[in-house]
Image (cartoon, rainbow, N blue to C red; front, side, top):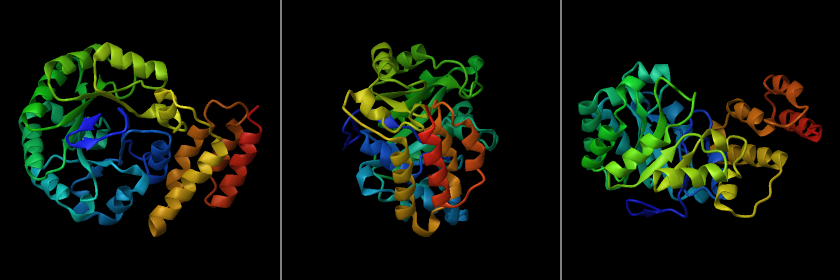
Length: 312
């Protein structure tokens, strides 16, 4: 698959997930075959008014190349400034978030709120495309609500504004992550535009991947929650042989993040991952609460090893 002139190894992409797609996790997903990784979403304004908060989110590993950075905002001038920021120059692709449903983002007129303001969304996208030679992609949803499903119109606007690829999450903003992703609406988007369309939502198995490609005709898929605690899902979807050990995955996740982030590393920000690595394993429930009370890496790894040894 290609996004603009950027060639990917395959068409299965790790979705940007706030609080989860840190450099350690992205590196693991790339190791297991993700065709592309994307940073957590970065506030365009945050790059200028909260550099300390934005900088750790922009740390990447060599193995990730090519890699995409996702930015969000509702002010065209700050979006353009963000794209031109020195810290973003190492990225191969610029992705614009116009699908985030989180209240603090939506209520600020950003993320999925922009689906309700096409003129502003078009202005932001057009200005961003003109501001860089890198491929610009946009991620958005089915619509804000079932009464305002406009992803086909939105997709056409993106194409007309010079976007190279779009990603469509088959849920409305009001749904957040409940219910089932609507594959039929993604199929309509695919048929309405000539640029590649990436499908997002409910991709957890190889069968899901094959079914979404077949039903929608999309060029690729984006895997989000289905990858949490399971970075090996990419190898499974691709039909490649793989092995994994949850404890070793956790050690590598922590070790990679700590090495690459240096003084910006905060173990506390990785703790939410640990429950995902333990998810579905029997007899480990008693350890989850204890994990959230620990701050020392050695203590955490010792407890995780105990939990995993009793999973049967």
